[in-house]
Structures are given as C-alpha cells and as structure tokens.
Length: 372
Image 1 (tube, rainbow, N blue to C red):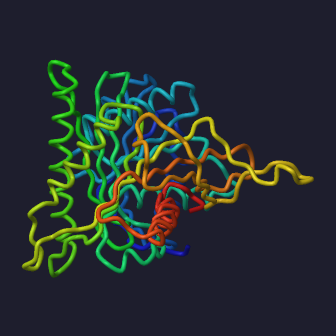
Image 2 (cartoon, one colour):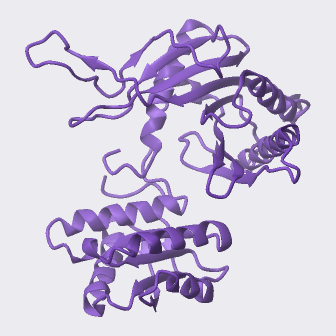
Image 3 (cartoon, rainbow, N blue to C red):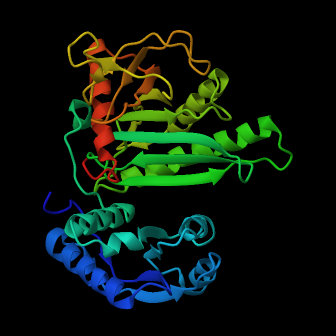
C-alpha cells in the first residue's frame, strides 16, 4: 500500500514525553514521522505541542488534565524504558478513555531509538493514528450482498471486574466498504443492582443506538437511503443478556427500532441477520496430522462445520461454523465459533455461504493488524 483511502489531517495534537527522554532523539523522530506521513500516505501533521511529565507515574495524569482541550485531536504519549512505564500507560489510557475522551497513541522509548527498520516502524504508527481518527486505510470487495445498501453491526455487553460495572458497545458501518462507522458505548448498571432493571436499561439503549445509526447511515448519501440488509455480529463474553432469553429480547429490540420507518415513500423493511461470535479458548484445528511433517495450523480462511453445543445458543441454530481468520506460522491458532441464530426472511443455502465469506473478509477491515 502506497497511500491510504482517506488520509486525515492533524492540526492540533499533543506530544507528551518523560523528562528523562533525550530531546534531540524524540525531536528527530517526530520530524521523520511527519515527513513520512506526508510523503508516503498524504497524512498531514502539524507540529505538535510538546509537554513533559515527571518521574512519578501519576505525573502524566496531571499533565494531561492541564493540556488536553476539547479541540485536541490526538495525544501521543512517549513511554520511558523504566519499569514504571506500564503504570503510566494504564493511567494515560484510562484518563483519555473515560475522563478526557481523546484519540491516543502510545509509543515506547525503545521504538524511537531503533536504527534498523525505522521506516517500517514509523509507517505502522502513522497508519494506526490515521485509522484511530476514523481514516480507513484500505478497502476490499465484500461480496454480492453489498450490491444493495447494507449495514454491518457489531455489539457486545461486558462486565469490568475492576470497577464492577457493565458496559455495552455498539458499532455500525455507514458505507459499502464498511470503513466508516458510527459507534456508542454506555454503562447499564441499575442503582439497586436489579438484573431486570439492568436488562431494561440495556435494551432501551440498544433500541436508541439502532435508530441513531440508521439516521447516520441515511445522512451519508445525497438522497436519503436506509439499508436493505442489516447483519448483526453479537460478541459473546458470558455476561448479562447473553443467555437464550437475552437473545430473544435483543432481536425484538432491533426489530422494534426498524418497524414503521419510511424511506422514499415506502415502508422500510430490511432483512435482518443475527450471528453470535464466540472465541474458542481451548479448541484448536489442525491439518496434515497423518503427514510426514506432522500437524500444522489450518490455512487462514478455513471454515469447518462443527456440532458444538453452547449454553447461550438456541438448540437448533440456522447455521454454525468454526473459522480461522489469521495465518499463524509459529504456535497455535485460536479459531472463532460463529452461529447464525436469526434470519428474517429465511435465506437460501447459497446466501449462507456468502455470509461465511463476508465474515472472513470483514476480519481484514481491522486496521490495527499491520499485515492486513
């Protein structure tokens, strides 16, 4: 790749570095970063505002609170080689995600000091910064289903033990390449800790997310258009609302959010597909077990139909497959279990194969993987 699909422009960003860092080293690295970003990728970067933080891990929080403004586009934090840098990383990320919401990029001091392969390292940092700022890096053809307006949705509910809070995340694609997206996250803890009240909060917010995502989708075109197909990938983490009863309520919430909408003078009635996604922590798939070279990881994109029973799944799913989406030359590859649990209207077996192919292709739209 010699450029990116949508290069971003960073005109107001912050560079935070430890007082122990050698100024000449990081200043030269920043110049190389800006030059390569502009020449190789068309990403324009103004000179950042540079501030330092002290030796205590808590110092970075004070510096960020004093310097991060509503207009700040991105914060880059340079982490020292000191063992305390892990704590600096956690404090900075937590602050920039929860208290001062801002795009952030962490870089270790060892990285900017390397002399070999420095162009490749800087390129990866530039690509990550552009992708984090909603700038798609590449696109791939996603298949026949995208001949019509199609929205792909990813949702997940999770429990964070450190804060004893439940969070729900929602992300919906806005264009035919699934590069642009609309996203929200919200906490759904009831004051009394009542599980029923928590589910009501979750389902209410889910319905609101669907409606707002549809509005954002329709604003992408000169002539308002709503998706003809909606495909939901529901991540399973074993948390609240992940049981079979929760599935029925979530589907009903989405159906209610879709009901009664008009598009170009006609009632909007898109197809709805719901796929559960479960990480397989202990299952491994191999090939060539009887060959002279022994067992090897399956090639990337291999899908296998397995009869796996899981407590959160319907007894008779419409389709179920296990797939490896990455090439792993060393070690073992962890596959992912996909279960088609709802489809309206029912599709033909040919469309089920298209869904499997689409699922594999979408894994290449995770821009944080340097190799695609």
